[in-house]
Image (tube, rainbow, N blue to C red; front, side):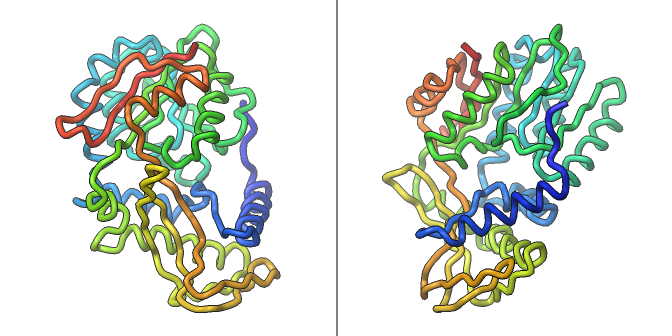
Length: 315
């Protein structure tokens, strides 16, 4: 079994990474910390919004091509899902993969993972469900894989876009190292009109803002901080040079916040950079796949070219 994140380890890592990010010259936070229990539920709400096209578009691509994915070797072995997110996407593949033996979701949010795994067990009683509570952005360690079963990695939701290019290459490389003969289905968001992107990440209903602001509430809860939420605002920015949407939490005034006993000064309009969402062209994805030891076997997209689902093979 891979190393699990114990509650104590999780708290220590959270404290260390949050303080390191807030005391850096440009304040940052790893986007994985947006996904506590509250954040995970808020993100599921985001996926239902009309403005947020990625989930429904990816789901339509998966549905249209499920019969083709069923022919991949891992569809008859073990499916490893990185980030146990939308049950709709998971169920779509589990329903299509009738000969699948093992489903192994990996997620940093232990409670969310437990609930997801229990739901799958009830829905698919003949399927072996092995949840792994771990941070898949870190080295995997030894996963409880059966060597005789081929592996299919399911990495949906354009999560690969949350990583800087070098980090994305490193993540894909460590997935390949942990599962050296695997095939992977990975969802990728594509570049498109700035207006479409900004509305998707700063929706009129304010759900994305609540998702981003929940990070401050989490820091208040878990690190005895005193962020005044009324003094910060959600901000989404299109960075054309990096082909990414950036999410920030913007300080609305000069202020000092206490976090785990440390005093953190904010200038007026200074931000905490909380998330990136890179938009990859087909060429750009092929380049990072090649640099990390994968090759692109197939690309499926929607009629409008908004999103793509890519099939990769480990070299």
